[in-house]
Image 1 (cartoon, chains in turn purple, blue):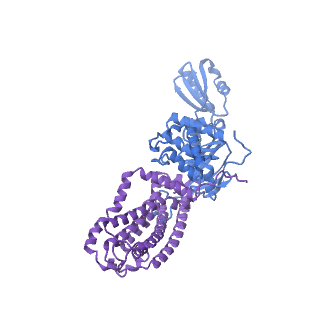
Image 2 (tube, helix red, strand yellow):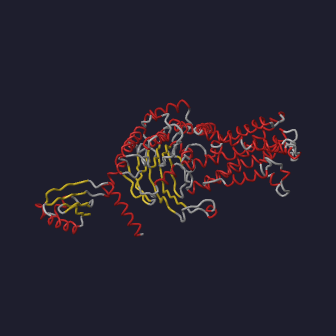
Image 3 (spheres, one colour):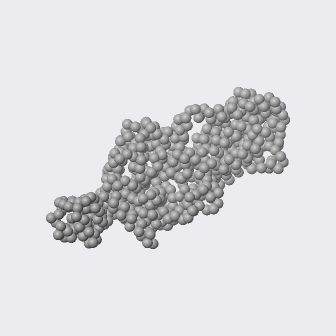
Length: 276
Length: 339
């Protein structure tokens, strides 16, 4: 049987990404108060640490500058959280609103969806992280400007790792249809073990090795080394952080996309795709 | 006009879809209502030619939506094959989706906070349309579906009929060769529904689009005047024209008025004994006979030969399509009970 000539090549990754970005931006600006509250939700949690730093600011464990120490921890965590939660959130929204099937019936490979549906949240997370750094500077945090390039590189690698974890989480979400157990579990572990507001050295001995399993640990502590004259008692070489994050990125991203494809195929076979 | 010599736009061969119960491990993640294997589509085969409209009929759970979902690649068949414009809907799903305009039954399947034109722009971008081509296509398609004055309106503010038109516009925007419309008038009022059906029929005819349309509405099926695929519990019960369906399953409906009630009663008994079809007494003096397809009016008059003087009037009516469909499903019910 001869096949009919196709009228059009369909959208590539760039067009697909731009289409989703445009839709997400319009959506976000439809709810201005929510947007303002989201930004406040990033800034306000930093304020208490300003006062706590007045109390414990000179502790050598945190490099003698607890405010800067915490700003880096919270800023990088904010960036990574945006990257991790974006795709799962968009997917769940699409489930609930009944638009997922329409997305899936478009002639774009389904594996481009994790990128396309996540990019707004990645950008929002990155901007929110920068807002944390900006507010930190206003409050008195001091950064070593010579380490900015390294910090940017680490944050990009961290965002890729976060997005990859988000894809794994979304793959599981396709099966559970609600909530994101992987993301919740990971976020809990990261909040306890990655050392965002206290040093990994303060963790019990048995818990410390677990920290090294989390990309957050490398991003946060590598950035502290890059941006602080004294990063505290848990000093991580930038090269170590970069190497670890590259390994995380390759493993998690490849594994995440593979898992997402497999769960999509499984849901397609079970007939649960688009259901909720 | 349907071109029967061309390659079929849609081809479905021995299609079977069984929904299996979720594996045990999955039930820990989410509860499922499927406790045993359900055969949603059972060995269904048909073809749709370019320019041909096929209305898919069937009660809820007949397998209509499952077939549609298989065709656009949202689910996979357990057995059999389905192709759209020569592309396999499982292995070449992306290619299939370039050729198909899809309208799901769910009216929420629009970007509700976005404008009418933003909904179309998003779809066009994902279809790979260039900016200038897309802008032109949006204007033209909105005009085609009668939404030209609503381009900047937010979707949630539209009426159900307008939302249906917008969904149709989205399905048509990229000039598909095939339309798959799942209950396109489901939530639409009768007047808007009538207009939408006429619009679909005209567009398909003009653009030589092959269309599969599921519907529950009899008047819609009649308006489309299309080929009918009748599904019941996953099986294809009938495939043919509406006229042939009438000929095959419906005799004519004869209403006879008698001068007196005893004459009507006597006639009722005579016709019943002759087993000419279904006889119903409408009132004291009037009978309605739903005749078997092999029985003619002459046969009836012959049976009532002795009462011709008592007959005041005799009127032939077409059996309502609703009654024909109900009869077919009732017969199928009997088959299932027997098996």
